[in-house]
Length: 369
Image 1 (cartoon, rainbow, N blue to C red):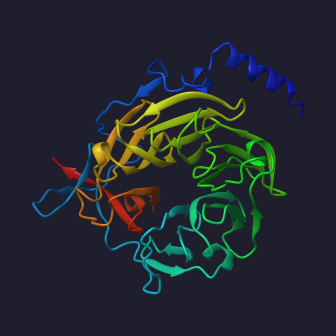
Image 2: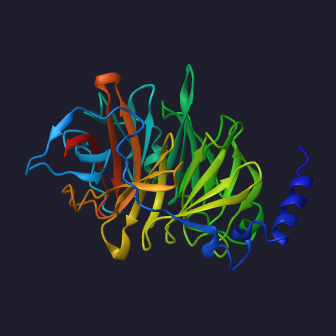
Image 3: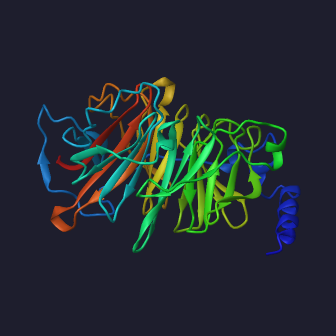
């Protein structure tokens, strides 16, 4: 493919200031930012659970359809797993196998199955335990085992494997662009767009997002963004398959940035409440689950449910303040976990917290009001 016309078009658009977000000193102009309003939804993407009667002892967090309770009978961590205070953990869900994987610093992977009741430490490649699995993604492949990519910010590596966790390919620091003169590379997250393409964010070093070929695993010699022009900490990246876009979590700015993958152009900026530190988002249809390190004014990190179609916050969930998860001061990652069908269906939010590191589960409930 001849990339020259695309490069010329990109340069022309920037010079015309059509996509002002890429112009230095102007990408956070208020005219380009959509501040998300709070809107209560009475209906969601699935049938509401059977109603529960509110009692004084029942702790609930969230609003409207999106109310949750602590599910303390789930995601029990094996006793052999050490407590890692500074762990920056991540969660991925293998929907077909009904298995959840938690990437944990110094351990590798912890798996949960049987509706997240059972758990074990995955006997995977020892490389996973040498650093910190900060962010990861999983890609179904039909009859083949799903692909898994993981970003290790401590070792500065991207790992590619499958759910066997044994065979491992590795991608190291890029050798192009700003990386030819700057040695820093500390990737924080990854996102598959297909079995051929993987995107990486370098959130703890140069604040770049860049593409790589999956097979063979190699960089595509292109990167975008920067600390000055995009985000002080480009922390998470998620692929919006329905629209073919990349959703990038700009942590200190509390912004979710939508990038058109085909044109590499920033097209939308959504703002969470001022002071919120956005780590990453997980998608379930039109709904983005936003994990936040801190809330406004340094309050414990919340989980926001954002309806991307209506561009509104439909629920604010507070694991520490409302549900009693004392270690959940800082949300680091979160994932939707939907299991069962019909009346047997259950909807969970799984989250990891940082400092101290840990994992928790919340269950969707229907509280009669």
